[in-house]
Length: 349
Image 1 (cartoon, rainbow, N blue to C red):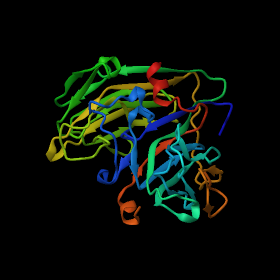
Image 2: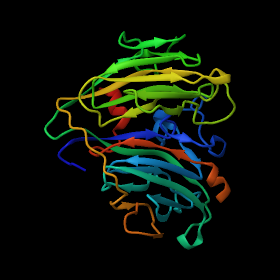
Image 3: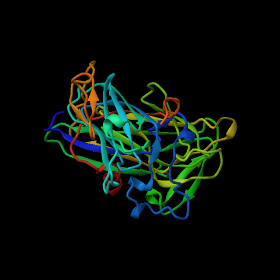
Image 4: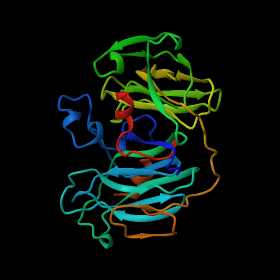
């Protein structure tokens, strides 16, 4: 990591659409649309978490941190980074009062890394006291926004900005939870919105609900990327479990100087599922210096709570059938400066 550069740590909540859960039915989560949902007083980031068996992630960059929880209900877990395994435990005789660091590393090459977090249940050899659970709250990754000496600023583009081009049928919502007080939505198949922009990073925010579904994002006519806007609660298709707190629908960084184009397309399918656009945040540096990715595996050191065993020098930070079914994928480009700023930093700018 270039410590002289303008870097920032981005926080990804467990409900954000940039995380893809293979099978929501094997995860337990709070319902953010329930009457007892109070995120401001919750110990969890944005008031939500996923209690599960397996988490998979793809990471590009030098720093990655995964947070969960420790206490008597929790057992051992395995972290695999680029095929190198470390086993640790989240068991504690008392519940933690702050987020528990399940895994952390800040010295990786600026390249694509594969990470898996898997629940192992209670393992007596690790000192577990009977807890079988694993709780995932949020993760953080680092991005370089500009080279050293540059300045950066954030600009928020609302859903009704005239620079956005909508194709198909779109409606509008109003809510105090949305940035600027409103959002645009569609359930039209292949309805799209496109947007020209300049910046070194772009963030797309929306909401999530069980009547949302797949959507694609294309940046600069590149490869189409597919995401899922269904609520983090899982459950049947319907108007339930809505998370109106801004959720990260898409992120890209390390962008070169010049105009870029981003297009979002709703893949409504037979359910006529919805997509909501809340706002777009652009990071604009005074100087651009995109980094070239290195084609190599992890070379940094990591750490995890109560590490018990591992294989290889490059890593450190239930039931097996269920673990294979419950996974979440993540793919982004990054580099590090601040901890736990992330989305809240973006929304304040």
